[in-house]
Length: 494
Image 1: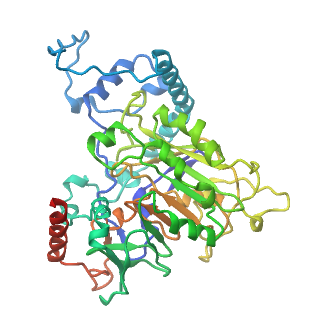
Image 2 (image 1 turned 60 degrees about the vertical axis):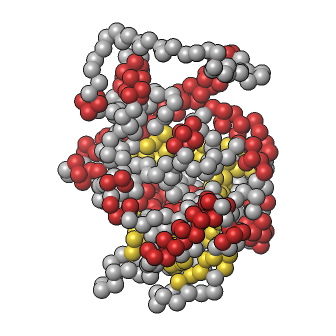
């Protein structure tokens, strides 16, 4: 994590994840975008708006047109539409109550929101370019600074194709037939008593990560990490845990918003927006206050739902907005900034309960004499341990800065950068934190989701080489995995 200014931070997602482990590291190739998206419609859209944007916007890094081999055409002729038999094609009804004027209003609101954040994004891009240009090193080393140390595309990395991942969604549908179990595994191969894998709160209370057996698959559980693998209807263990510790000081939510990209590619099951109101977030928040971080796509429909329905239902207010600017290995934007249907950034809303004043500390123990916390500098945000190794005191600031831009290379679809280190300065010391709709675990945090162990499997984490030991966790044989796969297939065919 490198701070380029008080409002721009350069993140390496693999380093953020590696901070959760002592004996493991991220498998290379998970965070690697070698070049911008080369979709023809993106390139054509950028060329059409190239003359209309400002001088600063024209300097944005976009797709290399030499690679796309798109011939220049001053007067493009649209192709003739294919004949369609109207008698066999069903007519698409317009939703009741919708009108062209309403659609224009929504588009105008989305454009205003985009125009408001564009200066921050452009400033962050310029800082990245200055950082890369002033670095006295080769291009390969610059890529190492931006993304992982080993540059390889996930599809080209053969090591990531050898191990088959456990389909947690399919296993959830068969949990009453298979009764899948979880058990911690010691270094000598012995296992603890198995417990139910689903709908059960499981905790690693040790000081370092531990290996586990999740239905015949090896997983790694970070130190002091707790997880609940369930769907949205089985949150009672989480509510009970929150009640015992008076709630969580920080809650990060990454809902699977409905979008065409996820539906078209079958990346993950989406959730209707109205179902989020079924989460009793008030019962999960700490009595002294809570900082809620909500990821949201750029679709105006979701932003309007959050403003008009979700926030009033949860009793929250928005206090700041952060942005994740997605770049390639060489620091280019993954897509043109002015393409409306695929922006190169995502929005993180920072929320707080309505009853909290802007400068109210999150914990009485962390309050100061003036009931105000000192201003936070980039040095404070990037500092996590003192020279003697002791944890520094946290600043209990209720209102984080607005407009922070996080720059990082994206990984697998919808995988967000871990926020634990960025949110720490605004929380009390040893604050209890929760991530909802999680697909990976964070040390010291509680995580919930129906795919919460997805990135904890062996193909995403590899053991460090410790002397003569080539592996810390016992790897299960392919024969066991094949047997498990055959059992699931036989049940699905019935």
